[in-house]
Every structure is written in structure tokens, then in C-alpha cells.
Length: 414
Image (cartoon, rainbow, N blue to C red):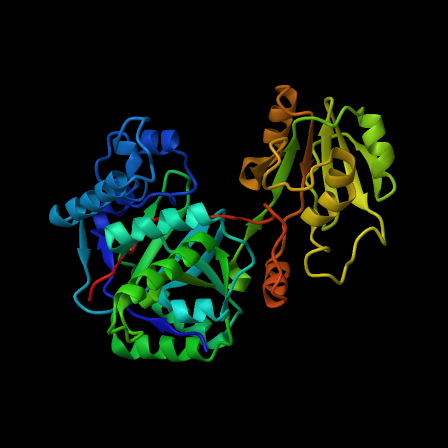
């Protein structure tokens, strides 16, 4: 079963939501966040990235930074910018971008189910990032950034979502990036019971984005459980903030690659090796792959189309059949010596939202020697990897649009 729980959400006044809601903490660096929040004292960036309120010498992982986030959150409450619903609710959150919508349920999900693998993951987490978010939650006594989770399309939930979203939303605004954000409050017990029952019939759910937030919720639960001799499993710290989307509505964009050097080789030498595994042809324009196992290559002012040859990869393997693995196994590792893309400083990754023009710009600048445009990983591939208990290749999924922090907050108190 998939256990969900309503909660007394803390949310912004409808007319202030656009000014409050902010990108997730890990989408912007400190400089970008400071600039975005400039002149807006109620931006949620003062809560989820409160280091922007200090000079650059502050340690962003220090307790004073976390406590400033707590003070800033309390200030939003004291000023009436944000308020807490009087009874436990569920919430429907819709994002619309480029004429496509995705609608998810904001609810609390179970740490115990996450720990047991019923909320499946596809990424490893880094201990320092988990510790940061766990410290953030512990000091703020609140979960301010939701996890982004998928479930397999379900007709009952589809019908329930459609009925609720046919009503007027409580919050509706366009963010500066042209994404429309809408929020419905579900406070009728009949609707809540129907949604809880429908989710209980699901076998599992899948983390799409937010592995560190999920693992940090588990760490927070462990900390509180250790200190609580009367632990029952029903305490607020046993649950974490989540937005649950049907898999058929989610969109993954390409996650392109740029490489700083070719290991002392000429492009001709690189292509000579690559021809063992790929069919390579010159292209007259930027290559945005329209099919899996096809890549664009840009170097020395020219574009090439590179298509994987049959037999050059294991099409039945959950991870080896993903384009990020095919490129890594057949070219990046053997030819450039990039065996660990997560740590090798010679490779960088460019979210598909920036387009192939960004690849041209980066290579033409001289900072990088070669770029690869990718076909996006599919949701089906991601679920297959999670079902197999495998880990996705590094930097193989770029979800867009992004959820906003501050739309609904979960306070760790009844």
C-alpha cells in the first residue's frame, strides 16, 4: 500500500503567493538566490536559503544560518503573510508550462514506507547534502521543500484529481519563468478519505526528484526517534512532505554534456574510435536528437549526428540501455578517461531547458572542446530502473517544470 496523510499546511495568502513561493534550495546558488530575492523580504528564499541574509564569509551549514531561516519563517507567520489551515487537509498542485500540465497531490508520506523501499529511489545520496537538509528541518522544525514523486497512472485518482481541479483554485499565478502554479485545498473529509483509500491501493511510488530531501526526512526521524522513549510511529516526524504525480504527466528534458578536453586527441581520432560503436554523419544544423540512442556532437564549429550501432549496448538492461550509459561506456570512459562523471572536473552537464544553443556557446567560448546533445530519458526507463533496484546513470534526468518551495509547508507540530 501507499500510505498518505493529510496535514495542517502552512501556506501563503493567495494574493501574496507569487512573491512568497521560490525555486527549490538546490536550483540556485547563493549569488543567484540573493539576486532573485533582492527587494522582496517575503521571498521564501530567506527561509530555504537563508545564507543570502549574510555576507559571503558565512558558513551556509552553520546553526546561525539555519536559525535565521527559522526566524524568517516565523516572521512570515507573524506578519500574516503565511497562515496554517485549522484542520488537516490535502492539496492539489498543478504546474502548467509550454501548454502541458501536471497535477499532483500534496500530502505527507511515510518514512517507514520509504525506509522499506515502498517509495522507490533511483539515486545514491551524498551524506553531506543529507546532513544539511536534516539540520535544516531539525532547526526550523518544519519541512519546507517537498519531494517530487511519481505513481503509475490510476483511473480512480485521475477522476478524483479532475473533479477537484474543476473548481476554482485557492492560489493561481504565473512565475517569472512563465510556469503557471495553481493550488487547491482539499478539506472535505469525503474527498480526503477517497484519496487516502485510492493511494492505499497502489503497490508503490517512485521518487522522481528529491532523493536528498527524502533521505534527510529519514535521518530526522531517526534523530527524533532515538530521543523519544515513548515513540509510537504516529509522531509528525514519521512523515515527510511530498507532491505525488501520475507518471504519464511528467516530463524529463535532455541532460546534455560538455567536456573540457579530448585527452590530447584530435576530433578525427575521437571519431575514429567512436565509429566502432556509432554511425557518424555531418549535420548542417544543431542536432536535437529525436530518438533514443541518437546523439548530437559539436566541436570545432561543426555539428555531427551520432547513432548507436546495434549490439553496441544491452537493450534489455535497465541502466545499460539508457543513453547516458551508452555514451559513457562507449566513448567518455574509454576515449576520454572519464570513468566517474559525478566527480571528474573535466565534464559538466547542461539542463535541456537551455537548449543546444548553450552547447554551441560553451564550446565556442573555448572553455570546452566538445559537447554532446542527448535524447531525454523516459519516465518508463526511470521506473524500470527503480523497480530493478538499480541506480540511474549520473545526470540522466532533468525534470521540468520545478515545484516551488513555500506553496505548502509542513510544520513538525500537531
